[in-house]
Image 1 (cartoon, rainbow, N blue to C red):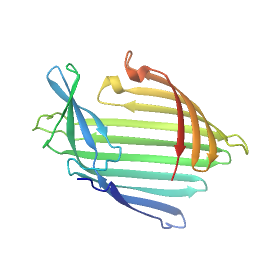
Image 2: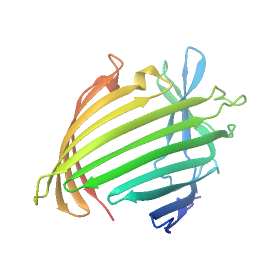
Image 3: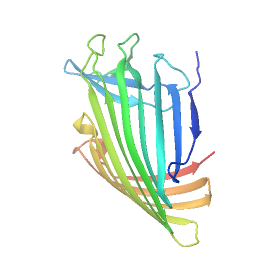
Length: 227
């Protein structure tokens, strides 16, 4: 059965003469993956791509509140909470993936903070996100809790009245698994075909566990269209 992804309410109001905005929502919750290695089971990752179905019937509630203390400066806090369930188990030795059902739902909590500052042709932005998944003591995927943390800072510069923009970004990602930890510098160039159509070319210098995919540098070519 296919269900809606979720619903959201957005708005804004003044506080002491300052502009604010907010968003609150309810949506289908994320799904979790677990991995089995040498007889031990651990949480591997979170799938939260906006599912059209809700396999575990768990919902997520969240919101974001932002304030504009200065012209061009936005400061915001966000949070989400709910339940999430492991829906697949990966056996790394056998290289198989098993779909799971009726697993114990775990606590799912996310907190975040972000900012954006526009000054003439410059933009500086950044974000911090922490995700916590609770433990489960029953079921095939019973395992301990896990935490993911990441943050980034980015600066961009618009080349005068042209449609070209230069980007530089630093990101740090901390996972329960050493093979997924990563520090990254990224350099890129954007071309704005229109206000909602952007072409992007970037190069990532990645520093992760030696021999892991997270240690490989990458060249990216993207085309983005916003509705």
